[in-house]
Length: 475
Image (tube, rainbow, N blue to C red):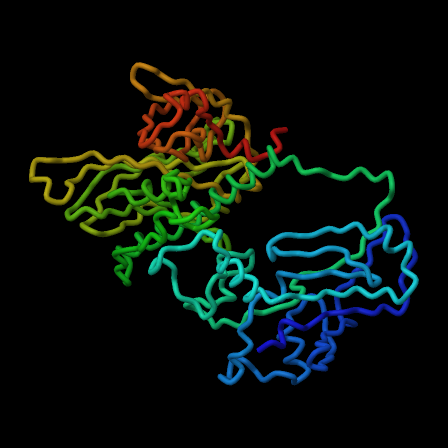
C-alpha cells in the first residue's frame, strides 16, 4: 500500500535545446520514467498520464476494475502534493490539483552542468489529509454530518473529491501529471498579458450562471412539454435547491442565501401556465408549445413579435402570425405554432429575436368555480446562439423609489436580454423577478425582499443592473 508514496516521475532528455526567444519545448509525450527506489520499480511513463495507467501498461498492477485484490490502490494525492526538481535543484512544491503553476528556472538552467533531469516526486494525499484532520486546530465536522467515503478527510485538500469515492464510481485515487508540461522561453522585452480580474473574472462568473440557468430552463421546458406527449411526463426534480457550504456548485441558492440566476429562471419556468419554444438546430424546425399544470382547461392567446436586436420590427413579422388563440387541457400541452427557420423572412439570423407573450385564463386548483386567474408569461427565441448575436447596448436605466421601496429598470434603446439586477454584500434577500427580457421603451418595477440587512439600509446604493450586452466587449 505504500507503493504510491514513493513513486517518482523523471525525464532524461538526451540533449537540452539551447535557449531561444519565443521557443516552447513540449515536455509531454513518452520518454518519462515512473520509478520507486524503495521498491526497485522502474517502468516507462508518459505525460499527461496517471501513475496507475503507466503501472497497468507495464503489467506491474492488475486491472483494478475487474480484480478486488487491487483495492490497495485506492490511495489519493500523487497528482496533488508534488516536489519538483530540475538539474538536481529544488524548483518548487505544489498542493493544489486545480491550478496551474509557473516556476522561473533561468538561473538553474544557466548552471546546469549535469544531465538536465526534471523529476516530480509525489507525496501521499491520504496521509497529508489525515494529518491535517488530526491537527487540533483544524475545523471539524460534527459527528454524523459528513458523508462516508472509502477514504475520509478529502475535503481538507485541493484535489478532486471523487478520488476518495463517490456513489457513481470506485475510489482509485489516480496519480500523476494529468495535464501537459512545457518548457517556455519568452523574449526579454515581451509584454505579458495581465488578466483584468476586476472585469474578466466577474463576467466569466456571471456567464457560468447564465449557462447553468439556460441548461436547466431547456430541460424543465422539455420535461413539462412531455405532459402532452405519449410519455405523459408529469414532473421534474429540480436538483439542487441550495448549498450547505461555500463552493461553486450546481445549487440555485448560494450558501449565504443569495439567489443565482438559476433560481429566478426556475421560478419563472415552473409557473402554472407557460409558453416555450423548441428549436432543432440540426433540422431548423421551430415549434412553440403552451403547457399548463392547472387541473382544468385554460385558454388564451399567444402573441408573436419578431424584431431585430435594436428593437425595430421585422417586416411582415418574418412570416409568423401575430397572434394565436389556444385552449389547453388539464395537466397538458398543446402546440400553437410550427415552422422551419429557413422559411422565415429574416434579413439576418444573428440580428433577430422572437418575443413570445402568453395571456391565459384558468382556475388554480381548489380555487372555486368563480375564481378565474389571469396568467402571463414571456419567453424568447433567437435563431443564433447568444455568442453569435449582434447585440446592441440597451442603455439600461435603474432608479429606486425610497417611499415604495421598489426599483425600476427602463430600456432606452435596444432589446435587453437576461436583464439582471444585483445587490452588494451585507444584505441577503431576493428580487420579485430577475433575469428577464425587456424591449425598448419598456419598464419593469419590482421589489426587493430583505431577509437580512447588516448595512443599515445603505445597500440600496449598491444595486446594479446589467444585461447580456455587458458580457460583450461593448464595441
